[in-house]
Amino acid sequence: MSVPEGKPTDLLSSYDPGLYHDELFGGRDRPADHAALIRQRLAGLNFEELLRRSQDAERELYNLGITFLVYSNKDAVDRILPFDIIPRVISAKEWAHLEAGINQRVAALNLFLHDIYHDQKILKDGVVPADLVLGNNCFRPQMVGLDVPFDTYIHIMGVDLVRDREGTFRVLEDNGRVPSGVSYVVENRHMMQRVFPDLMQDIGIRPVDNYGHKLLDAMMEIAPQDVGDPQVVLLSPGSYNSAYFEHIFLAREMGVPLVEGRDLVVENDRVYMKTTNGLARVDSIYRRIDDAFLDPKAFNPDSMLGVPGILEAYRKGNVALANAIGTGVADDKAIYCYVPRMIKYYLDQDAIIPNVDTRICREADSLRYTLDNLDKLVVKPVGEAGGYGITIGPRASKEQLAECRDKLLADPANYISQPVVDLSVCPTVTEDGIEPRHVDLRPFAITGKNTWVLPGGLTRVALKKGTLIVNSSQGGGSKDTWVLQDGVGVQEGGAS
Image (cartoon, rainbow, N blue to C red; front, side):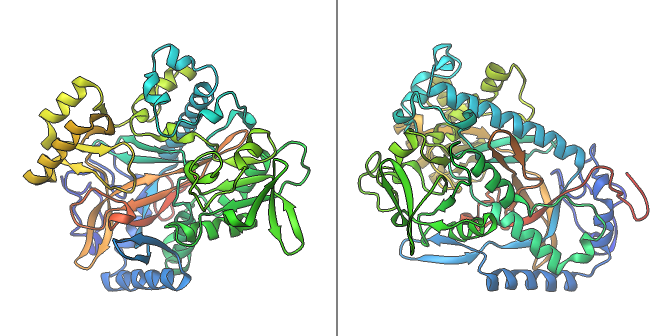
């Protein structure tokens, strides 16, 4: 496929996305007219200037300490998340579609969580297999019968989206436990404003820097109703966590204390923070700690990260937790397959954003199909994250396929399989020039009484040529994501 007509010359003259849908140019049947002005401005630059700005951005990210930890066998290495200076652009119309789909998905998953911890109607009606939920490692019996404010369990959600060769957005994965990455969304925007203001000028890009205010509003909204001025804190596992930079960032954006488990204590089923002036009551906690480590009295007794007794304080309504305990069931990769059915069951609607076609290998037919087509499919373990444990059939060696087959036969319930999605691409700065690299998108939604979706999200980019794995732990980077305001002109002096 050649680049659509109207492609500028100069900097982008040799750029070719191949057969993939391109986020800056569009596809054969879906030209990205909304990005015409941005393409025009990029074309007016020379490569040396673009490379210089890119290097300036990466140097500033390092100096600002915008990092994440990567764990090797022996060491924890602090790295910046590589940043690509060419933005991903989303039209107002595309965003309205995605926003509606994310709202729908959040609503269905919260209804599902309320149901499985109360009447379990969806299990009794056979829409979702009961053993898949009740036997799930993330199902928490302690939550059965417990009401939470506004029936909201997932207060912060990240939805991983991909765009296929035809330009259709699809949900790849739900992140309803402890979704990370929003700090890079905001910092990427700040970086672009500093190093590339001329590209952004008068484009009409929706802002992202109010995320902290929206998160604080939701945290105060879910706090116990008898508290006039709720004290919110962010609970972190500590500085060795891979997302510790984000914990610091979000606490600062909300203007709340960043605490660790050792900074909190439970007395008379209420949570208090240790301060130089004594104990101060805590009413609402944004936790970045998994269930298993949250309360050693209730879950893992060896946990040194949590707060003994916090579950009982939570059960008695004396403190709010976001996300709620037990939300991990909803972002299990096997449960993901049933979300379109949940949407139909609870909302009587079709899914606005479809799933990627997925087979659950615990089912005999799906296992047989997966084994028969192993060299054509992507096989994923249901409990892993960060791109670990994935086998991409068309790119795997015979040895890797044999190893995957053995793992499937040994524990089929631990795996799902999906077709290889030809992820969309975006122009990306490389040492060899501007080249296409595969991208995905993780928008973030905040839900208290209502849901608000951050206009944009984390665009992750697979910086290695040809790879489809965009995860930062696997060498991926990120881009700024521009959601354009409705009615913004797309040509100099013109309108769309």
